[in-house]
Image (cartoon, rainbow, N blue to C red; front, side, top):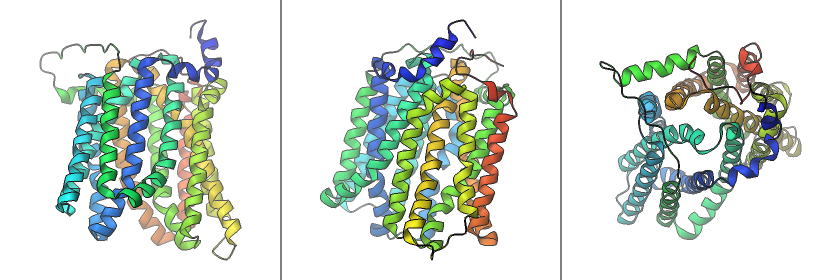
Length: 432
């Protein structure tokens, strides 16, 4: 590290406002926040349409759920490679415009009475493809928008706004759905997405032009280079392996938590909602403190804190001998604390994790690095969701949640026994 690395890092927690004063990041953050709110609002309408209007069967609901993930599994590596050879800012604008058009088509389908299972399935699939391109462009673009020593701060700001959107969006969506109806709700989301496209078009940055491919090389070679870089890098390899392991544990708890709380503990739906609200508060506080924790401990240790902290709530839920007869107040306090600590841990590690990736990888490999990790994460999550159902059937909910806690512990262990432990976001980009 250079002589000025320490001041930059120790002052990081006090410079969050400075990131939002950068015009390019202000446009990027505003567009991302608007899209997050729009998606959270219209997501309520999608769920209502699936259950009440289409009267979808469990098998059809599973198909619709899988369609949003399928593009990441089958196209993730290809799109990631393309994003290292295309203008990412232009891609963001095009995907926002495309998303607005698709959302507007839902309004037409609803008003004409033509919305059915297969037409909604096509909409969800197309939106999934557009989201894949948008995600694959946005993460590699951020290092071109803010200085590298501000990437953790920038990701923390994005995490804060996304948490607020995930909290307020569904509640607002439910109210608007009642007042306006589904067609107008989708029209609102389409309008917000179009506004995001305008903001994204105003981002003024220079994007480096990739070197032409050598003779005989094609996109497959680009993908292989990205995979090799990710899993051969001294610190990015353990980071990727830790993230994949974390996703396995997360897929289990995300699949089972709601069922366990509502079915095993017999908490009412309103109490479940309160617990999720505590999770939103924890996620916001985690994102709010992520920059300062990273500056104080170093990025690697901040990631470890997040990975280690997430073990506790699921271990407690697995071993504390509470059941439906333990009393509403006690159970609500328990599950609310579980969600609070769980989201707090994610808020701390996510900004440091993503910021470190963006700091260390060279611009020419940003798209492939992120798509490699993201694609494997999606595959792991699908496997984990299926595994969760099998384990819960064979072993019960508590034992399965305990297994998830052990998996989270392995993810933390990977960090602490590897060079990632001493990583800092001031590390120099390289091509290890």
